[in-house]
Amino acid sequence: MNIILLGPPGAGKGTQSAQLVKHHGMRQLSTGDMLRAAVKAGTPIGLKAKEIMERGELVSDEIVSGLIDAELAAMGEHVGAIFDGYPRTAVQAEKLDAILARHDRRLDRVIELEVDEDALVERITGRFTCARCGASYHVRFMQPETAGTCDKCGATEFKRRPDDNEETVRTRMAEYRAKTAPILPIYEARGIVTRIDGMASIEEVTTAIDHALATA
Ligand code: AP5
Ligand code: MG
Image (cartoon, rainbow, N blue to C red):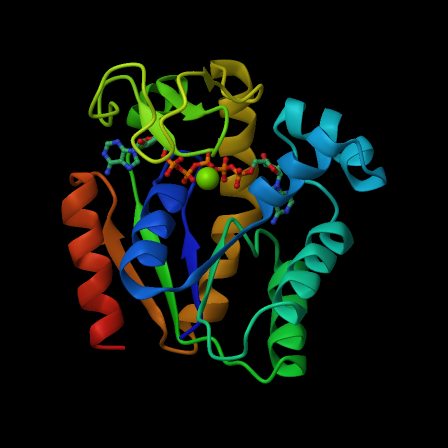
């Protein structure tokens, strides 16, 4: 099964992808994570993307589509893909269709996480991740079981994303409204969109996604 998780910054795409990976053995393809890895490694793509991401704007359609294509090429053909944060523009949606066709895959479902924008700033400014394995937490909604220690790998150092400040979040939301929300009708016309209340608890959202995929 191949699915898209669609929703504004902080909607819970990464959090829910982690659940799908854990419970269904799917593979998370997050263009945001891939770009951050490229920035950290100082690759040519990372050098191009760094300032764009810090401003909260979108990196070019060609770069992100190339990353997705390469990841799919390296994946086992029976492993399901979760597209997290891709596609984000009409051009990317078109490119994804072509990429999927090339890899002999079809798009089974688009999950839209519906959220209240005012709550997203709190979610994003409270987010922190493990400096070693990247596991994601929140100061209020998802603390590690033992304070100061990562549940997954036991590391004790955490970090925050440079684009997780209120000003950049506002730009990221504006980009979502202007360029990403308008691609939904493409998938609605195919009858594959499920809308889920992303303001429910993390566990409730996971249950709703499981239900949507079981009946897809
Ligand atoms: P990306 O990394 O994709 O960021 P984003 O879309 O802004 O989304 P986030 O990762 O911030 O949010 P999320 O929905 O994953 O939320 P999370 O689960 O972490 O992209 C970053 C940048 O890269 C872009 O701005 C752009 O520059 C570039 N880029 C990436 N892809 C691109 C593309 N395709 N084209 C062009 N440019 C691209 O949750 C957030 C917090 O809330 C966490 O702390 C979590 O614990 C908490 N939380 C989650 N769910 C709940 C819940 N139900 N209740 C309470 N708290 C919750
Ligand atoms: Mg994310």
